[in-house]
Image 1 (cartoon, rainbow, N blue to C red):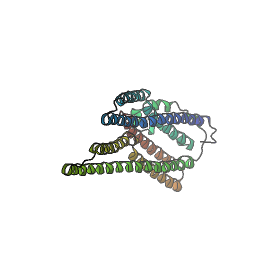
Image 2: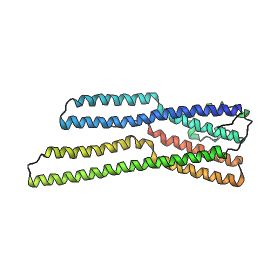
Image 3: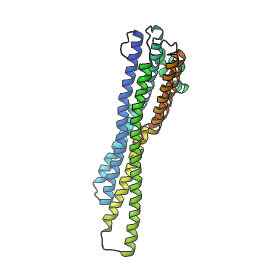
Image 4: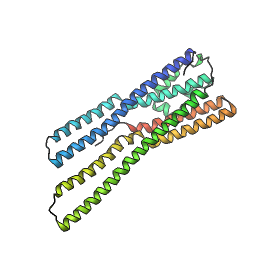
Amino acid sequence: MANIKDPALIEIDNMYVDADNLSIQNAKLHNRILLILPITAILISIFFFVYFELEIHSMIAICVIFLFALLIIEREANKLGCHRKYLEYRVLAETLRVQFFLSLSGTKADVLELLPWFTKQGIPWIGNIVKSLPLDDVKERKPITYYWIFDQKAYHEGALLKAEQSYKLQAIIKKWAVTITVIAFLLGLIFEIFMYFYSPNIDAHHIRLVLKATIGIASLSTLFIEGYFGKMSLYEKINEHKRMISLYSKIEREIAKKGETPEIIIELAREFLIENSAWYAYQSKNKPELVL
């Protein structure tokens, strides 16, 4: 936040910026790994199909190379711990954000007392960071409605649109994959009935090969959906953004009636931290995993 001169607030804000940057860096690496893992698995499936159906024997060597690459990527991802760091630094950043605005508003509340038990037990080192904050030294006071409520509400509104767009894309890909698979199987059934009764002099092998490839491509698209989109928890994200928009709207109305009272600010802080804890819980399931 700009125009802050209080040394204690500047220190809290600097810690927030550091945690935020670390979370963003690890999130970018985590997302790249989520994208690489299913793409590599898809390439392995394609190369094996070419090896098996077209009998291009050198393809099996490429399959093995890509398979080992996939194993190495997963091992290194777990070793780097970018997923865990992304989540934990984000929880720390949001905890510091809450404390910053609590202190700036003059509300005499320690964010450590408001943290959900799930967060305290799941990420205990965050409590040690909070305990080191210079809370007693904060002297500056400013209204926080614009910087916290309006700003965060606008963020969640924008993030909601992005999440809904990704969710629609996921649904479209899944719908087309199912449709193409059903059509391919029906065409295969019609073709085999035709071959059985009429036995025409045509190259049935190539027709069957095209049908296999079509079904295979459709199946690979579902593999990508589960390996990438499935790890984004889009449905949970959409609901989270909607809840946060509703929360900020509620607090905004209360402040318009009563002003920035300590009770309203503490209510917002507590609900914010509960939502952050829920985010951590569902995102914890999205650890990079081997997909084959």
